[in-house]
Image (tube, rainbow, N blue to C red; front, side, top):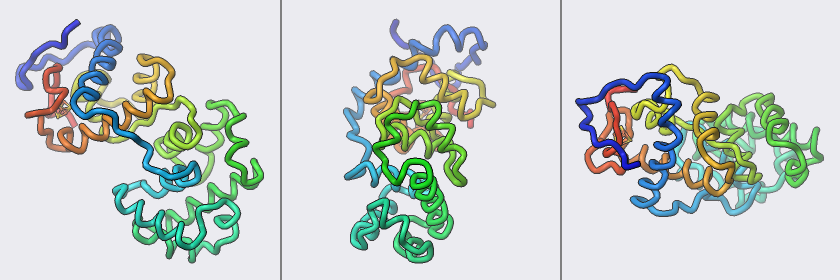
Length: 240
Ligand code: SF4
């Protein structure tokens, strides 16, 4: 089915029934359109699984560029290691991750994760692979400072488990294209994508990265639909 061509100002809000009937097809079409426009994104930008976990925690409310600076400072200090992270004093860790912003808070969150990893899994990331996705996600969400997006990014990018990552861009694109109710929350958005896509780590990885790309280039708080690869699909860019 080819996507409907509709100008932004001629939009009719779909009903809930239409959402459920059309969302699956549209979600697959979005992926094809984004991949064809932007090509493979090659995420996650981390040199090791430990860096992926640390990066997922540090990237909250900051750009990846700043996270990279913090990761470089940690590597230079020999801190990209679970034993070193356990032993380093929290203020020293905070100083090292300063470029990532909110460094005191992020040092505390990182330490919370480290304590959990040592208490439950002997500081060994490999042991997390033997735990089911559902169980592990629930455990991680119990760590103070680890929210939905961070937990899912760790599951997907560091541990290779099929957990779709939702962020601000995902919600914006889905709402503006009528794929989901405007009041939908994180879990509903995640379920929308997971229900309508094959359970495939590489696909989830690529799709999230592509949504970030279209969000950064076009689907900002004030949408720039001109030239957007998704502009041919029905949308209402005035939605938040
Ligand atoms: S910028 Fe416009 S066309 Fe592009 S994803 Fe957002 S609402 Fe859709």
